[in-house]
Image 1 (cartoon, one colour):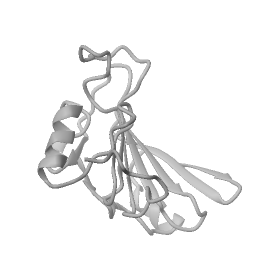
Image 2 (cartoon, rainbow, N blue to C red):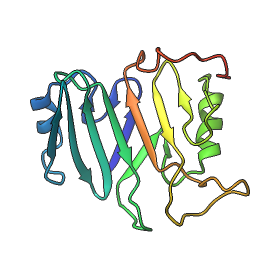
Image 3 (tube, helix red, strand yellow):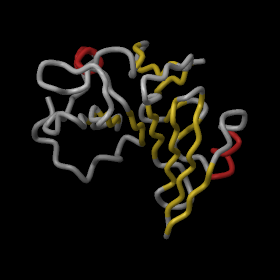
Length: 163
């Protein structure tokens, strides 16, 4: 199975703007979802073939972001998380970012462990305490999480370092 990132619209079958009920229906058939409520926010936590899935309803009403996590502990999954045809969790992180640049996307990489793509609102995580392959600088070779959100999700940040 493939989970295809479609920034800034979501990760099929999850779409930015869905209600909680729609999001729960979209993940039916995956691992039993857990719903966490706090103040005005709701998080749905589930997994698809070992890939962790967090559905964020930060306003408590509509999906504002979807975050996917690579299977940890050396586990493998038959589920691929694809961005423009590349598997985010098995393609080297530098290649994912280079391909984004080739497509005309700006990258904010002032925090190397958390590069962002403004406008389409992709946020990557490349930090882990797990024993994973690392590049000469000590950074994990692959991303271990990716967040997809609406195009204005990161607008509160200043992007002077984006290239």
